[in-house]
Length: 178
Image (cartoon, rainbow, N blue to C red; front, side):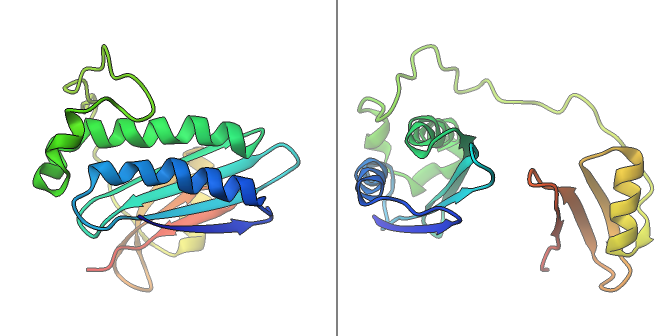
């Protein structure tokens, strides 16, 4: 497995890199093809250490993010989360994962009592008029409604976009390519 570690406002020590490489490489057992793990380490504030891991191949991608008091604790939280995602969606990934990997014990946690069929379901459908507006106006509308995202048609591109409030207080824009 190829592991890429990138950091922003955080300088990982060598033992952190070695530990990440050792623990993440165990996920090779799930993938048929050469997998890539992209690890992003960052700090926002004195006690906010954020770790984001995107793991997969061109066929399968899983991602998780966790913020905690230190990076070593984040490792113990994020890796079981990623493994749960792989196990939960193994039927969706079908033949893109190694079947024999699921016969062996879990890498990071016991899946006893785990119900593979227990997935979320749609409990409410909301229909709304979609507005043709600018990104700036969409952000204002989102804040007025006190929502954390807003769907609109971008007046400049004439495509459906989504603006959302990020955890750092800034805003994000999702703009699909089709």
